[in-house]
Length: 542
Ligand SMILES: Cc1cc2nc3c(=O)[nH]c(=O)nc-3n(C[C@H](O)[C@H](O)[C@H](O)COP(=O)(O)OP(=O)(O)OC[C@H]3O[C@@H](n4cnc5c(N)ncnc54)[C@H](O)[C@@H]3O)c2cc1C
Image (cartoon, rainbow, N blue to C red; front, side):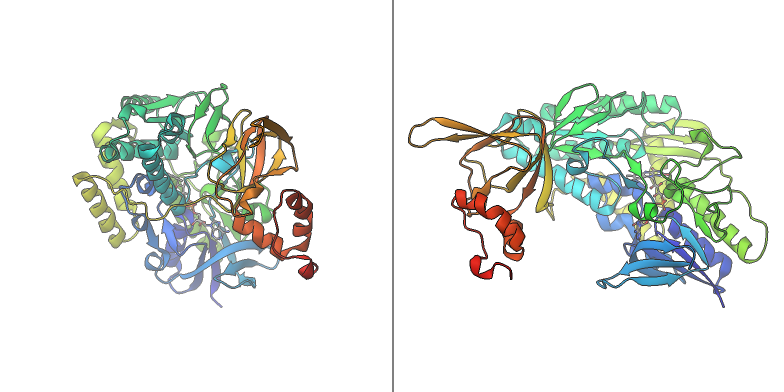
């Protein structure tokens, strides 16, 4: 029977592994790739998608086009049973789990994020990992410009025009450069925004940016970004975030409605569930890319900790989490699986980086190629040529080239095809003194205090006096929304730093109608305030 090789993940590691396996085995092995989407994402182009120089669909390639002869399964990997040699997945609209057997398993699922050490960041930061993240960021930037153009409130305008990127690695630097270019090229369409009102900043905890590059290139990058009006804060971390502010480890409070977090890499929950030992948040493999204790399980790419020499201990002794390395690792893992199947010796992964490239926006970049440092336009040109050549599929290459050529000719599109509204149920963080809402504001949710406390100010229409009510953990406010009121009658501020749960009206009413316990829990509270909940006594206990 043909050997079954199952590859988890269709990113740089997984897609290139499947291609290399197909070349090595021809039709003599069954090769299957399981990926959550039916496309391969070219992550280095995501900042360009966010900045609007590339159409989202052009930064991706359909896996079925680029994996000829490979069985592609669009499904979410749930778990792996290493004893029984089966992967459990959930596919399509089907809720029943499906088991996929394997003889050899390749894990190339990439990494997730964990912001739990920085309260509020998970809830209020935008990420930069997936195509959806890049689309969302583009839409969000346009939303801020649209809002800044029309608001009469100086504080709101300042927050809308302050854009903060956290993390000075490749993705952070390229993202901030692209964001700034997009904003600069769009401002002529927003006459009420003066360029001096726009603040774009990059925050990095380390003493320098672009750690993977030689220091002179990082210095050039800082100089270029600063000349283009991007503030760079080094040795600065994030302490916490709210929906309007970011607090740095220096104690600075930045009014910003845009926080893009490119930090906090962490193992994905599915990788954690596999029960394999993790080191530095990754799956440790030996130099042949095989997972310790499993002859038929291999790992590569961002999710694997790959030693580049015996006795590796320092950071530089391990393969960096880059696309360039993932592609090389893919070739080695495919060769070693072929060797294992044919009973031959395995070879260690060895690859010395030929260099590193980063785009800085405004047609400038930095590149270290075969030990030579290149800056400015030539580096940017090399960056574009290299990634164009690396893009899988001639069609994708042509489309990206057309996008880039058109981008040189005119303004970037400001069409906001989809606005990503707030989720119906969400945590929001506030700092002491923050306004949660003012009397007269639009009603936007029903609030429950999770931690900290808030202070509600209610003017008495008869006496004109104002009453104050402090609401602590477990307390609620904003219930007029449930009545269908569209405007607030009270003003609420955070008395202490606090975390609140906000629920939209529709979802609250659905829960009240569907769950008698929910309804009964809220009934005394709502009765006191004259709010009738759906689902009366007659249907209690339904
Ligand atoms: C914005 C950005 C810019 C970058 N720029 C550069 C650069 O300039 N140069 C460079 O070398 N590197 C760059 N990188 C890093 C590079 O993209 C990664 O190192 C590379 O993508 C890692 O490949 P991977 O296969 O390990 O993971 P990924 O490419 O992330 O692929 C993992 C795949 O697994 C899938 N997956 C995850 N969980 C599941 C699940 N449960 N079920 C099914 N499928 C799942 C994902 O959908 C994804 O398709 C950049 C990264 C980012 C985010």
